[in-house]
Image (cartoon, rainbow, N blue to C red):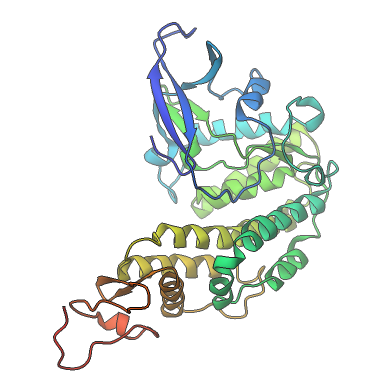
Length: 375
């Protein structure tokens, strides 16, 4: 099974200590990928070992010789049953609340797992402003700055530059204090597995960290895309749940939740634009339809994050499409109309069969001469 970061292999392990026949899984990291999220713990396996008996729905670890494998949960993802934007049934949402309850009870001083994050990222318990500041710094340094040689001009064409992070900091840094707890930090529908008995299991703990519990809720809401009515209920249930476990965990949520969500939206702008460009495959021609789809998605991202990033105006789909085209051209490939065309060094561009009417309106796309026959 191929995911964004890993290839996962599931296979039977006959002598595993399971109540019934089952498979185990092992993951192989995919090479050449960019990581856009901060990782806190040395290894996922160490964390899962520490969570045994404390978080109910974590697949068990199995020792096989000198290897440690994880049980493969037979079933399907929550997203396969209930896609993004649809209602999650109460039986499933109740189990998600059980997870929030268990996570809220785990603090840094009760979790003996080695960390890999920088010392400055381990801010004082309850200092939510410092916590979000370190996340912003990671986005600025590891996503924007680290890729600026290739993407700064593209970001600039959308109105994004280093000043965007100044606006973001001013927008979100006045947060209420809340006691920190363990965060999964990636609770979306594809990381919930529903087994054949309708039990929910949580996988992919690589992005787990210690931090502001409201960040967990904000990230969860951002990725889950609950219908509006259910989102309101989830927020209310979450507040009641975490306050019961650790009083103060939902302090100031009415004001702070929109701000933390705004950070999540801003972070997605930079990460998803880079992912989009790389998905166009710089080494191959690209068609107008893929650029148009990408431009539509980029405009949606920019619109959601316009306020925290200080964007006065959001460029149109045509303007974004042209910026993506120019970026792609600089890296060796361009497109025409409904067909594709490849650059060959300085020799220029191959002509193609026809140019779409939409493509002809985009700046920088060569036109066929009237009356000429185009191959």
